[in-house]
Length: 195
Length: 195
DNA sequence: ACCGTAACACTAACGGTTAGTTTTTTGAAA
DNA sequence: TTTCAAAAAACTAACCGTTAGTGTTACGGT
Image (cartoon, rainbow over all chains, first blue to last red; front, side):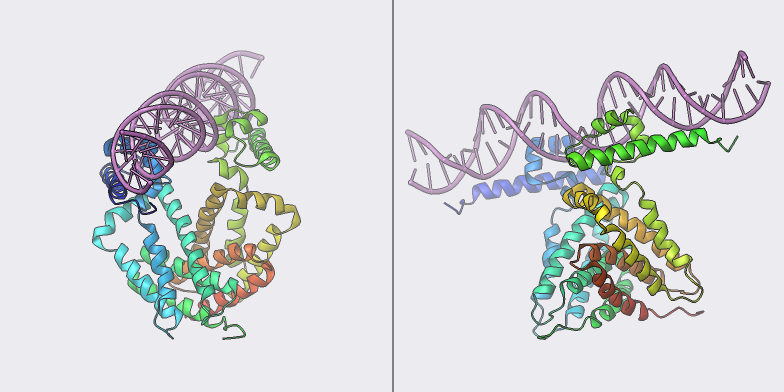
């Protein structure tokens, strides 16, 4: 009953994937802004309303699996080795994420994002949501016990690091440089009373 | 000839102001999302195309004088007293900006911004532009001589401080708390070779 | 075999935005 | 004053993303 037995879920997932694949292909072929929603829907052979039942907006077609990013950040906090300090764990994760998105395979997609104003804006507000999740994870960790403001601030800084490093000439070096700054900022926020 | 003699400029500015005033009034009266562009234009007695020749988007109607913010940030850097260190100057400016926008008079507008998704997103991407300007000002100051990455990072942090402090329970205290973190982050970025 | 419902389709519209074109206003030269 | 170029504004008509309203089909449990 509550476990719809397979076929429906698979068909739905297939439809979603077909839409996302078609969209990304068209966007890369002819440019994000030059391809309309009606066109994507037609090419994927679905109705426009169906497309919007799978994706909240045109931009969301491009950032299909953005929940990965959010989960990887929060898990870098909640799932780090016992006793491991926060900042190195986050640096490791950001490093991996930056390496992944500056890899050659991801280059065309990233170029597309940079070239469209609406995609850039969408990504930024997406990152802010991620920063809020990260802040919640940090604030919830009893080993850290920072103020709400300190948690939110560090979370923002970490997400900033991702965005800034990606755009730097040497992304890996930029991650290190920015994380030295984040580390220092974190140090001056002493743990609260019952550390 | 190349100096259009007054009246034209004044009339243009008056039209712009009338549009902005009308828009803000309607937005506050009935809600940002509930008021359409065609309605604003009709009430201001201008054509829709005229409205869009003065403002790039509906959201821009609300953040009419956002260049103030940008200029105040960059001038806090370029116009600070000789020998005055960067971070205190920026903290002072951010303090003033936060105080200004959390004042009672600004409360209705700010509430409106918070209640609309598109306004929130617009503001965030606006702040990023401001951060880039600030980064340029920092990078251009020979007394500071930091790397491009360090400049951009600190600029982001400072703009983050504004956004985060505004939302904090005690905005003034939050500015101080966040700026202690920023100060520490700044310290670890030693000045370059010819300091 | 039957029914509830999840997935999808279709039509039609709404609201922001822009292109294309034409009219009015303005500043200054002739 | 008349004239003229250009700026400002108007008007029309659309484009595009998005949503509401309303069926229709395909599943899955009973």
